[in-house]
Image (tube, rainbow, N blue to C red; front, side):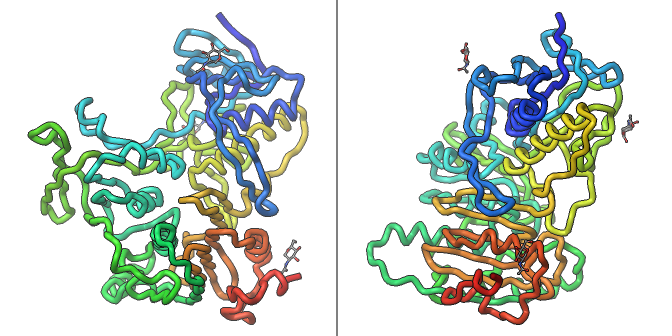
Length: 482
Ligand SMILES: *[C@@H]1O[C@H](CO)[C@@H](O)[C@H](O)[C@H]1NC(C)=O
Ligand SMILES: *[C@@H]1O[C@H](CO)[C@@H](O)[C@H](O)[C@H]1NC(C)=O
Ligand SMILES: *[C@@H]1O[C@H](CO)[C@@H](O)[C@H](O)[C@H]1NC(C)=O
């Protein structure tokens, strides 16, 4: 059995479907095949621009047979790629001959495994923020939950789960919130409490400017000075040195998750009654702690997934992803890759970095499609502008969230300041400034600032003359720059 096509796209996630869709637009007369393991594929819907280079969209699941006309589909699994002779073999033995191949096989959540099947049913893998609410439903009856992982998702989860005792084990000495920062998490938490109260006093707004070194508690400041090369992780207790009076105060009252720093799971067992898990955590210094929980939530990130053989090895990046250049080409000829499976191997611009999010899966998938089409048609394409500026739009706990540029000070070392404006239950705005220039922003709520921030970041506008007025709610900052 064999099939022939011009373009073969492997993977029914956002990257694969976006790639196939881009191909139907660029090369409507060529045969395009999508090979997917499941008859349910993901696609982008309700695409709405939020700023010049940013879109918000929903991800919907649909039957593969309902995909856009022009995309042939095969439900099967990739087993082998012969890049030299341009064919692949599937698990069922189907041979597909292609001219151009794009691998979008995605990532797998790095779910902690307790070894035994029975125990593993109590371990839930979480890989994107969008599944958090679903998880919350599943946890409705739980009393104790152990969260594993130190990424943005884990931290968000630690703050999101309510009416349950949250134990949070992280293998580092710091919380490195990669997705929302602790201030934003605080904002969400308080906003939720607010909705439960009835008295609606006029919300006050707080604005605060901080240098990086002020964000750490004193002991850590000293420790940090000794290791200045490390990245921009905020210390876990940063809010102690951070008074957002009237805006996001009120820290003492809420039940904080119990955090086990420098800890990893040593052993998981069924509790004697069989109704919970007994977990043994081991601290770096050898100390051992025991706890009991109903569930373990494993939010330890995504691992590029490529479980097929190839005739030649790919050039892989350190994180296990298939390395691609700015045209999404792998180092095997006429083989492309996009989405979570790949690692951006081009030298990133000043304002962009890779994060395995749906936004980037869509952008990379479309880029790979256009790139393959251009080679086929003998045309030239340039890398899409979206790779100049990191942008991600999402919805968290009912609020619109925009992340722009180096929104958590990523790779800025110690040389930056934060300017935060927080209005309880309304908005949380954080500007990351370096030498007076905006390098990144977190915008939560209906701030209408996304496009202005894009311009400020890309133009490198010197904001020093405006001081803190840049976030003064009584001044429309757009007016400054018209
Ligand atoms: C998808 O559609 C096909 C044909 O319409 C049907 O046989 C199949 O069961 C559907 N799959 C799912 C997961 O709904
Ligand atoms: C691709 O990269 C791998 C790993 O660096 C290397 O072993 C392989 O020879 C390269 N293949 C080609 C065709 O350049
Ligand atoms: C920034 O650049 C954009 C697009 O090039 C332009 O429209 C805008 O006026 C510029 N803003 C500033 C403050 O320079």
